[in-house]
Length: 164
Image (cartoon, rainbow, N blue to C red; front, top):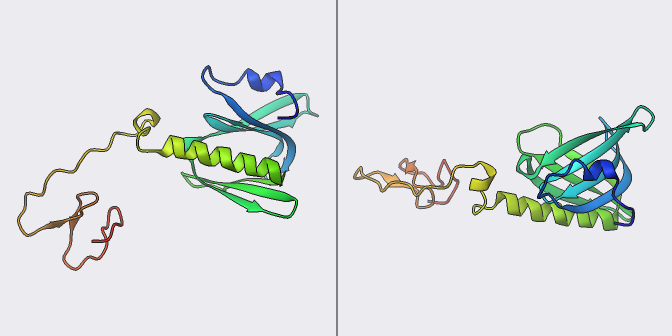
């Protein structure tokens, strides 16, 4: 972080939220004008000015809302593209210097893994995994991975996709 983080960003962070990367760079996005990107331990924040820069608005994305992140690396500039879990247009941060894009990609990937790990699923509001009940019907096959009943001739589980 070469520039100091503006106070307006410090004021919107949660009590345990840690700032990991601040990129002061205009990002050309088709829907909104972004003047900086902030990556924290809990979310991705886009800061966009309006009213001639006198007022700032924020759009944030929790890591639970992002399903994947891709780095499209160019010669000098790169694009970080985040796929949203519940549909909609992917979040695209284009025109970032390669070094900033690589840092952003690494941090977002690391945080996605942390928030989507099965060990932290309960803290993210996802019910804990429960071992499926043992099969009780004779002659019915069940998936070894998830315990779902299988039809005769199935090669893959219809619930989890595991090979049978």
